[in-house]
Image 1 (cartoon, rainbow over the protein chains, first blue to last red):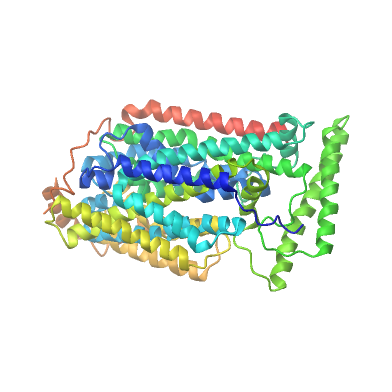
Image 2 (spheres, chains in turn yellow, orange):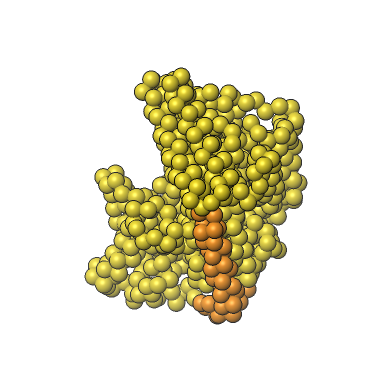
Length: 570
Length: 49
């Protein structure tokens, strides 16, 4: 058994999938059937409630990869990944306290419009352009990543899968703008919640009858899958409380403060109160949500203690009989050790069985890596993505009842569509507000504004789908988006932090500091092999340091000119 | 010249003081909730390991 064979979803699954997707798209189109004007198209309805903003923010961040990769991550390495979100609540407090008042006070449509008010037009365009490059590519990845996993496991055509999800997103986002994104995201997140709860229930129900939920947690814990918090200060450890708190804070601040995809979500609504409540909703629920998804992965791991997992979860990895035999023996050893651990008469016997189970588990992991390596050496097709990306969906396809399989596949589609729709909304509003309108049609009426915004949304949709169709992306899908973000987020966040924290710095100084920082980050990425998370810090710190230095030296005469401009604006 | 549609939306209400202001309690509640969540996850880590 190299891998489970490709599973075809049946008619009931297709019916559930089609009804869910078409129902949500139809609801989005129906709710936004009346033309509500340009402000509504770009920002959403003025009466958008705080809960709707909170759900929209959460759905934007939770892409399909969250639901596919996170359980696999917990299956492979335990729940430690959840620590990456520990900085998020604090970042959201800063966004509520500093960013939202600034954005709302100026009544801006995009985050970069604020840079124009605080500095000048060229700094505004720099921030907006960096966002467009990064988000334009990232939205393509958002559509591509789940499509390649679904097509590999279900035997669907990759291009057709991308076109289906991308086409539906373009349809309702172009028609309804930010309003359509918001109303569909509420349903999409609802479907995701129901699907994940159902998957959790099925994992628990699929455990052997003589294994209680408490014992399942014991197995997961003893084999290191429930290690969610690590206070170690050892820098070689990948996920710790401290790295999650500091690195996560920085990433979340960049994402929520300087990425129009999110800024557009919480600027919907008429008051900063609603924006703040929507973000604090996420500050409270993000960690439990991610922990819950990780827990599903940890329980899938427990399930595979009692049923032999495939040697490779990714389909299409040919394995040798010798490897299969070794895998079978290692599984039997782990299964016996786990059984002995659960039935151990004393702590000493339990500890001995735990050591044996851990050793057998390590052997199984080695065999998975070896199978992949041998398949690559044999010249076979390289399986897409990491093997762990396929764990959750492999379990779903083979062990969930019919109908529920369709629902979980719908969860993946919904998550991809909600993240991509928010991406298109952010891209279109930034292009419209920061480039098209001020540069080409400053005197255009509202009808023209709506029409142009629709074309821009559709245009960005075509770009994202085209990128997804023709991109031959890197192996690690979840990392691709993070790397892309880290290359640009640091410089853009730097522009905003200078705006808030360094009142003496003016437009020209921060603009050239931003340009230098971005060039430096791209040069370092091309020449150094350091963790991509550092690029956020390098980009941001470079903007802050260089802008201060430039202001104190090259642009010393600028404050007088700028204060005249500020007086005019106020 | 600012565009009347794009740059002049209905004036948003701006509540509270510039920094933490009246939201201090809400932010404190988020910090307390974070501490409780970490404590729960830490207990999960310790209890079953």
